Length: 459
Ligand SMILES: Nc1ncnc2c1ncn2[C@@H]1O[C@H](COP(=O)(O)OP(=O)(O)O)[C@@H](O)[C@H]1O
Ligand SMILES: [Mg+2]
Image (cartoon, rainbow, N blue to C red; front, side, top):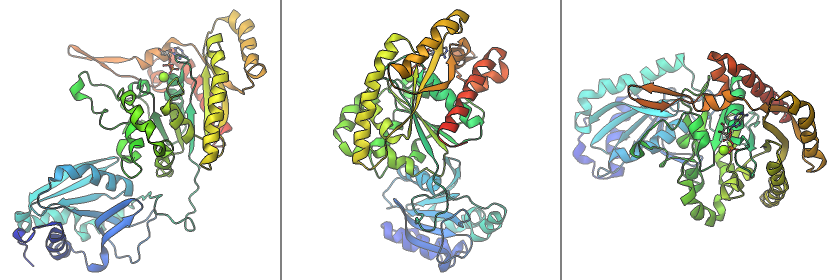
């Protein structure tokens, strides 16, 4: 049947006249291979089409999902719907998305967490372009490609618990101390890097408004305010709504930071301004728990870098975590903060109890920024270590992170392009690939990673 764009005066006519009557049949989709108004967890799709015929369909690793089609009102600008489409495609792991308002037709393809425009035409030229569209998302051409490439679907939201055999073993670790400068960020980013080198799928979350982890993983390379794209999408957005702003929309891949790169939820200085607003919303406090649950099949370990305070963001981090690492230089000021850490953990546990979550498990105090002076190591350090359990009643980790200049060097690495210097931070693990003086420290982080995996039962 030919298509007349004038017939599309509202969203439901775009659906019926353009998609149901024209596009789906022209692309080879028989009525048993597409579904309208599909609800998957918190996602509602206008149309979902399959390359192969499956009724009823099951969303598992071999699910034949292939194209999502979204119809919008003819007055709507499609630009405003791209980020939602990106969320659908990345969350559901669907390769193609078609977006149309009855005037314009766009097709996007998913690459990891991003989508790219791969086709665009005016609706009135659709008949002359239909072969191009068919080559991209026609049923036959997708069938051919799908045979080569089985899609890996990861939809935790839609699995019914009886059918799921997937083990839910994602572990969340907060790196926290209420004192600043003790090496929290250094530990968080390099532990994440070392775990990822061991083959773990790691998500690193920065929930400190200082955004040092965001910087350290290479996500702040811009030099001017107007290039700052982190203000609009950062960790605070995860906490704003239970329905929107999922991890799949906020996460970024670290940039030349590590090998392999890791996923990062960035922070931003504007967290300070948002704190009051979020703090007033009691329901926002445990939100990170459910956002993390949605990606439990994507990651083995979540590492959260926290602010040196007991503020709202520190609460959010400790509420959402299973385990706690407390980096400390073991000096008097850091030690004097430990009773406060314990009180804070108790308060958090009271809250966790109320929401039915088991108590936070303290992996231990991690000696960090420890001097390599032999006399110090022989006489002072052993005493400092004993104090942690004797006086503060906290477990001490075996691993030690020594004070190494290479650790601050790799974080403050930069490259010069023309006249400008750009930050080009590296993990100690990656830095050690080319700098011999970094190898000792990289090894210390590998030892730390090993101990962490043992203690959380995730070897
Ligand atoms: N083990 C270490 N060796 C050398 N410098 C370190 C080490 N740990 C941290 N630093 C440096 O100390 C400063 C504070 O560390 P950081 O990790 O940002 O602490 P925090 O997150 O607790 O405030 C940074 O300049 C960092 O480069
Ligand atoms: Mg820090």
